[in-house]
Length: 165
Image (cartoon, rainbow, N blue to C red):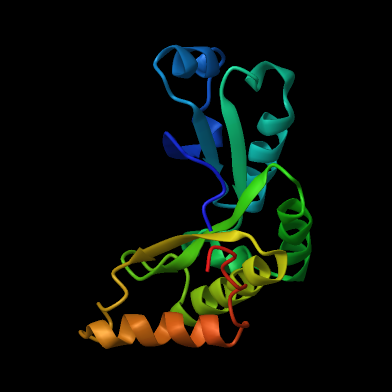
């Protein structure tokens, strides 16, 4: 599900400086998606979308926990992210997924956090901002990647019906 035509995807909210909206608009950038990689970053994205000085460029934010920070996923974080997902300026759940490159969180912890966020995206009928990196490194096969994602997604629910068909 595409929620709008985008010119810039994956802007990290902490990097935004005063005047970037105006410069982006002048350069022809029509919209930003502020990537939520943690609860703190998701809250920052929400605040920036609500700020009056961001009218020069369209902004949406994502709400989620990156696989590097999957160890921070607990009931309180899940509840906070779920509340953020209900904000009309939230365009997607994530950035979430699996990242076995640096293994900043154990595999099982990443899968648990990803599955919960995938379920959240289905429940809220929001897109999933997906992160996928080096998933086959621990097994050496591409089927492992598909299997892990398929298991996480099928435990959730069937995706909403595509209204275009």
